[in-house]
Length: 206
Image (tube, rainbow, N blue to C red):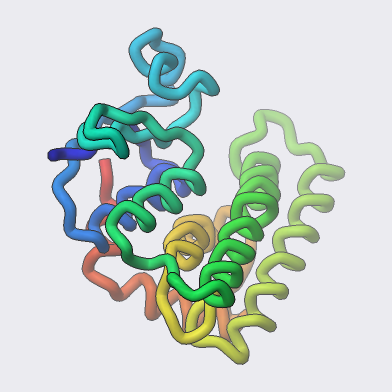
């Protein structure tokens, strides 16, 4: 049965569409225009009480009944486990994948979101915010660069949901005033991920 994806053109939304494209499973997209406050509509709040995209409804849930999932990281784990792909089954590989997924969820996402808010969207330029989050953005790119110097993907040699979660945020590096040439290992990884057909399709949703 089809999975219903509720999403918009943000890095968090694109994580899930990338995974769905990589899995090759049927899904139906529902655009939730956050610029028009669609996320606060009662019909969407019933799916995600936190009024944030993305969210999914799996019409063939664990008990055979529709099952909703919110929070992008939780959705990635749910789908990877459901379809048995992109999350290693061995304890070490699974833990490493989840560590880097949490790195994205806790840092390489929230901090970069603050960086590009202050740098690009804030109606008033707040130098403290620009400096604080700009510095943190570069630090996080540096963490990635060092790690990817010895690993093909975030979890090692295997492409996983950790890569899918992180790529859409790195795709906004210009918003963060980050030149990927300064982080050659990130650029190598970024170019390789971006060349994947499923990633290209997922990044174009909705």
